[in-house]
Length: 271
Length: 249
Image (tube, rainbow over all chains, first blue to last red; front, side):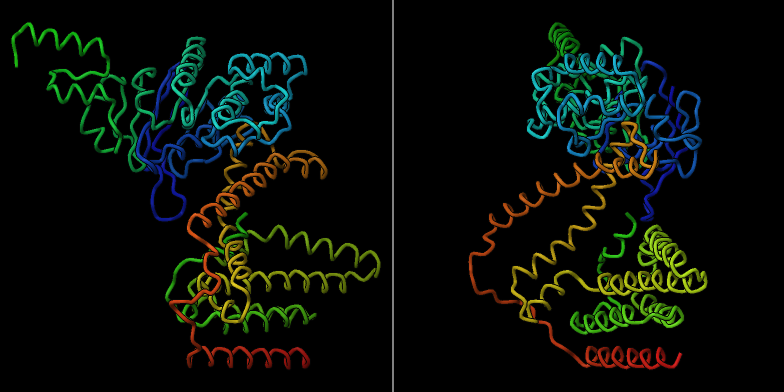
């Protein structure tokens, strides 16, 4: 459970990167945070493991105030994966890269071996076990960075732009990994620009713009709201766009629903 | 990493920003030399005081203060490593303290004078003035770009630190040796991404035909005006005064 109450944060340039954020994320929720560049998404997720502390308001993670604990303690509960894998990869081999966090948290060697094995299989990296992470392709590096955090089994998983540089097959696989972890009771927060990814796989969406939350709710309701999409400079899902153009009474992001509506329109003899 | 604020130029229009870089270079060399030459804490402190009006006139006090705050760690380091050995070998605590204070002040002065120079001199002007001082353009540009990438590097270091701390890295954990080892996960990505960036920049420059013509001409030439000469005179005058003061003290 994460609760963010009235959080304001500024980098000292006179602009509030976060401007009074209220957000509650229940256990085992799967949600996306979307918004234009510079909306404050990354600033917000840095508050979740205490890298940034709120200047006003407070952030509670599993009942702990982030101001009163260290990043290392919170990192055990909140696994945060950043956008650019080049900012975390440093080890000689993929295997050592994956065991870095596990060693930091002081897990016993057998447990480390077991978890590394799980991550290698889950992210299809077994073939690269002994390769240097620097020799991998962009997409593979991204998977190593995801694996290197998910391997220590944090209760809350926060991913900043996990789909960049991934082809559609890898995206689907990422979605199924996230859905699976979510079903096992993990809380998953995904920060992304990839609106189709959100439309297809993520049930709740939070829309940010200029440091504020401008919409929060079920994905199929939020992503079809033209005003919200425009205010946050998000390219709407193609199906939402189609629904608007068709002038559907209740626009949707699900193909089946749109087909059903078109059928009814045709039966009703409209247009 | 705050110490890098000392070199983050931002456009400004104060008199200090408009002074010719070559005049400011004279100031920089004079005052840096005095700082290295002086040994008395009081004389060094007077030099430090002389920076205050410069900082005020150039309106750079925020970044200057940040860079000083960022260098506090190094100053403490310098103080201890000067005080302890001197006190141990000479047995005279007062002498040791005086020389350690002088050393710390010297560092503080050097940071200040370099930061006054770099915070008020635009990188383009600096390159141009180097070229007009007959330094080959390639070297001038290399120097300029190295300065230009300092803030980028410091931002990148911050990103990397955030990423590794999120993976449970505790920088302040352990004894002296393991604390240094804690920097490996920061330094390796930083070095590798710097090499990558250098390659990218080289490619981008070549795509824009860098080096295509051997003889370069400039649209804007720097010209020494009355103010620039007055600045050199004032800098030389006050340096001389400080020199005499140091002998008298």
